[in-house]
Image 1 (cartoon, chains in turn cyan, green):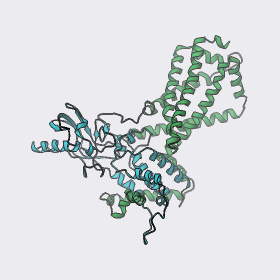
Image 2 (cartoon, chains in turn yellow, orange):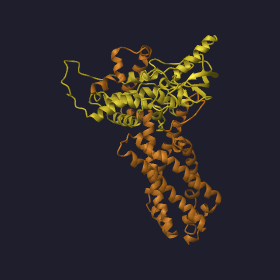
Image 3 (spheres, one colour):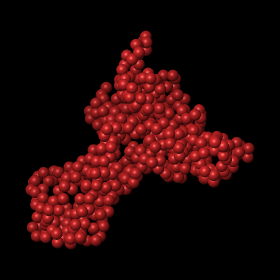
Image 4 (cartoon, chains in turn cyan, purple):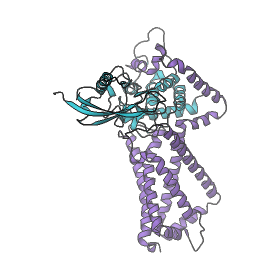
Length: 254
Length: 262
């Protein structure tokens, strides 16, 4: 397939610091290859800005192959842009048409304060993970293989939940700005397996308590999160979290 | 594969060494956990703490919503007696009121559930609104929201007003041997203004239930590949039955100008 080029206008959020007042800036970009990724398009914009002596746009990125969870912005109102199950770095400019205006905003949630431009502080997710505590495992001599029996479909369900890369798009897309899908996935990946049972109740209680402390909203079952999740994580994991928390709240005592 | 599932979890990262952001936030998390432990030692405070959590508030909405829905279903079935004529309807109302002390007790319970649902709903609405201080320039749906889920707080508020009107129409009025409940219903629903209000109220109720009924199962953690579809179907069926019955009553009374009930 021959590579094409398109001309676009990006309307991008600029904000100097956490407390600075932000605004949108319009830039016309010419001859953007449709084979370039969305972040490469931003690289082109930044090179051009730097050449002109302007401040480049700050944005988060790391692996650029859809696995690290660092990148993410809201493109035309959708977290990670228009392609399903795709991180922003894996989104390509072929998803856009010549002459398009592309509005790029940071993930917006009270729990994700803007640091600069498109970079937001998602350390709330780290604190939630931290509140989840530890998993007890045997550290002695190796056990026999298949010592703990786990049906294939259960292992798959746990693995599907463990696919969460912690990008925070669920909270960004949520009308109530809450990373419920993230916590649902993190609780589920362990709650599904025998190894995760020992601390399951305490984990659910502490992770939810931490989430509530971070200024997020309350899940309204709007299902926007599973529609933007780059790893296609299902809200069935949220139902499992609801179940785990209910069970823990009424039966856990130290 | 199985081991990988555990090791792939982000929790495992903690064993490898602290994440950059951890050092400064250590105190915050420690404080959190100690909050949990302190309150757990006090009798019943765990219950209040659960109710105050984000998930707890959702459980309250789900359970009170289910109870209000249950009442509505009984109310629908009871009111359907009007299709059998004035006598049947008046007799049904008379039977209900002959339950004596159960009536005020039931009423008090219903009001309590209703106000818990309303107050928790208002709290959730305010918290959710403040959870995103800066709105998005472009607001779109990625495909999850429905008209019902999108308008939940607003249909809720409108239904609250509707119920107030409804109570003032039929509940807080003098009922006598001469002026029976069926006369009052006929009078009110034949007023074009009220016909519209009642019709609109039913549509709003259908919207509210179309999200609420499914949502309560999800909130209580009832989600299973075998039951997802039945739950959706029942959601629509329950909403449809209630609304059709109430709308038919309204239409019947308007069309017949009460002659059918004579």
